[in-house]
Amino acid sequence: MKNSKIKNLIIVGGGTAGWMSAAALSRIIGKQNCKVTLIESRQIGTVGVGEATIPPIVEFNNLLGINSDEMIRETNGTFKLGIEFINWGKIGDAYMHPFGSFGRTILNVSFWHYWKKAFDLGIAPGLQAYSLNWLAAKENRFFRGAKIPNSPLTKIPHAYHFDANLYANFLREFSENLGVNRIEGDVKDVIQNSVSGFIEELRLSDGSVVKGDFFIDCTGFKGLLIEQCLNTGYEDWSHVLPCDRALAVPSEAITPKHPYTKSIAHAIGWQWRIPLQHRTGNGMVYCSEFSDNQMAADILLNNLPSTALSEPKNLRFKTGKRKKIWNKNCLSIGLASGFMEPLESTSIHLIQSTIMRFFSLFPHKADFEVEMNYFNNSIDEEFKSIRDFLILHYKLTTRDDSELWNYCRNMEIPDSLKEKLELYKSGSWIERNNKELFGVDSWLAVLNGQSAQANSYNPLVDTLPESELEKIMQDTREVLSQCASSMPDHEHFILNNCASKNNHIAKNQSAL
Image (cartoon, rainbow, N blue to C red; front, side, top):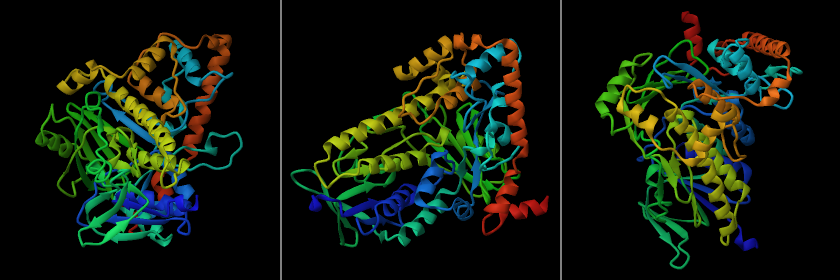
């Protein structure tokens, strides 16, 4: 068994996917157990526009032993409590998908069932009054949490906004300090075993050869190993997620820097807005069937919150995933494994999730078919659950002002999503399996935010007297409101803990 262990692991491609993989491998496996080599070329650019994350990134950085303040400082980052969606249900609508929960479970029944009854009776305001993250975000406040007994402030789910290229550079230094060997080079040939089809070595443009036991493909959309070499195939989901183009452009930094991402729907697609310390990330995701590049660029540039710092960068994509994310002795990570539009900031999470799932089934050199099949089935479920959650935003629209929204409103959706919508409509039921990324409160935020109608609620709610229900609703929102108001201003929190070396926030504060 000694000789069957993976001793040489090769990562092809850098960027966020490559260096997240290298950092995790070097930290968890250790150079004494496995040599990790990363091959990348300065001549090959990275997409590098992903600037928003979701709460599991905090766990990833903690696992690696990364100090979050140091990481935020080095990546010009800010904090994120959720995502605000504007004009999605109909023009003029706005709601938030906040991290964390709404209210608290009462008598073992989920909070929103009680809230629905109270709201219908007119004794409770909208759902936003029962989310600490939503309240804090709209007041531009942020706090990581503290050990306060029986307080909502004990743990505040959050994520980060950061410059993805700076995050990759940060992880590169981290990885190289742990022994990862970086090779500057361009892969020209991939050599496979003539019998097994396993990848055995890579030949670079300078004539050098890199041999490995296992390979990780982080080469982006082209999938140099997973697709061009192994012909794995691609599962296309563009019929239910039709947007296939994006424009990205940075603009000058804005103040205040709100601790949430904005997603603003337009007739042809949607626009993201992400506040960093040194600039603002902006982009337009759209469908080429219903819009051309010039129209998308005009809408994006006319709706920037500050002056553009460059010309828009064009991106093309096809939503979907590889038919096998792990094929033979090759694991695809990041854009090489598939693509989900950044509507819910899942791209960096899927890098993290793929790495962690692989660790849980870390193979020997060969004879890992059982592990590989289980891995592929498991991650396939996660991809599909994220797909359904993204479709939900489009399907629930009532907009009829453009071809895109008419298509989305009327399109056929997967049976898995149909079942969820039928359950919610019948009795406010929100069910999920354990492999789904988004919890019931996330589904509730979008369902309620885009006015999905539920006919009823859990009948167990009626066992609570109306006067007691009203008191619980009032007490809950008062506590959450007080907690939100007690949190520090977001920019002050950054200034006091993790302002970048150029001290952009300090400059903004002094100018006020």
